[in-house]
Image 1: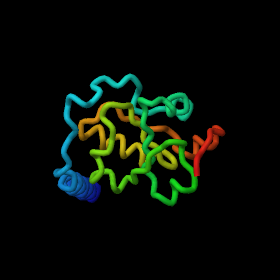
Image 2: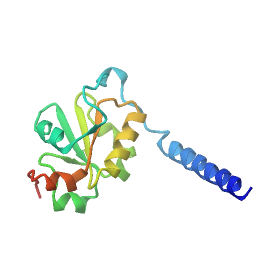
Image 3: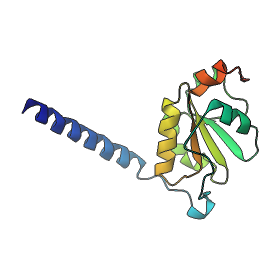
Amino acid sequence: MHKRAQQIQLFGLALILLVLTGCGAASIAAPAAEAIIIEPTLPRNLSVAEVHALYTDPDVTVIDVREAWEYAEGHIPGALLLPLDQLPARLNEIPTDQMVIFVCRSDNRSGQATNYARQRGFTNVHNMLGGMIAWQAAGYDIDN
């Protein structure tokens, strides 16, 4: 019986978090449907090698969702800074006519950003697996 009570409590907490998260995002307008690229050509998660092959393409925007101090320590050349905690208020800054790749330190926050954007109607948004740790381990250039 004790285990069942714990499960009910966890379910309740999860439900509260979902409601609070939804309430905080309720005022965010979804992008216009006609502006979104409907059929993304790549999977949700991309390797650093795939991102490296794409990041200089003018139709690709890389968005770094780390904090400003992390970004200043080194980021993918040309990447825009949009910290994860600012994403709900700045959702309108995400291009809807380009492929978007979210990046962070390890791929946790960028995965959250990808999920958040997809839940709000963006379809051509992707997460870079391994984050900047994997990017630097691969020996790819960074800007400071």
